[in-house]
Figure 1 (cartoon, one colour):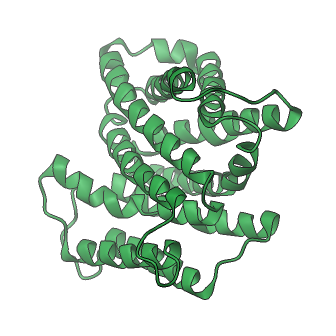
Figure 2 (tube, rainbow, N blue to C red):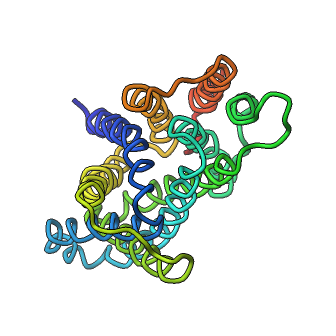
Length: 294
């Protein structure tokens, strides 16, 4: 099995874990403020990586500056993405939040244009158009021209996550993935603690359910997955990573149905299918014989 295959299989596992976590996070936010939850989650993740990768992260002197720089920018994008996504979950459903987040995959090639200076393929424009129509069907009430407050907030996270994927794709081949992973999670934790004291009045006791959710999301949904992503993107492209992440909503919908009994209307289901179709069109580029640099 090639390194690319191993990496992409690992990314699929990460995608399933992230999709399943939407319901857990939404339920936990009923008992704790958003920034405090995020600060605790990323602190747990950073501490775990510090204990596990401490000596390895200190090695590789020549690439340390690259890892710290990449980790700083990736951490800022990650903090912004989780902020918008988690706040959005307060006002929308887990499955809708996950499908909106899936638009990240459609944005990656267009953000890559800023890096690679290569115009998007026509199939990419078609894919984004289809995904946008799907987003409207999924989030806009019939006869309305606006989208819900939580949907709009969730939409903002897609830009931050697309930037994160591109940054990891740029820096992971040049730096030790251990230090890059640790740095980005530590930066995210620091931003969340700063915002917890500035942007909100923190609340939430350490009930067993909250402690369990913080530990579960900190270790299994943050420390391990982001380390896996950083390692895997050494062996695959940002576009292929984004394609794999596009299937996160499928996991979220299955979990929402199993745990909450949540279902999509026919209009919402059509919108969801259009989003997935648009994402796949962007990533697979049917009819294209030229390899995109991302």
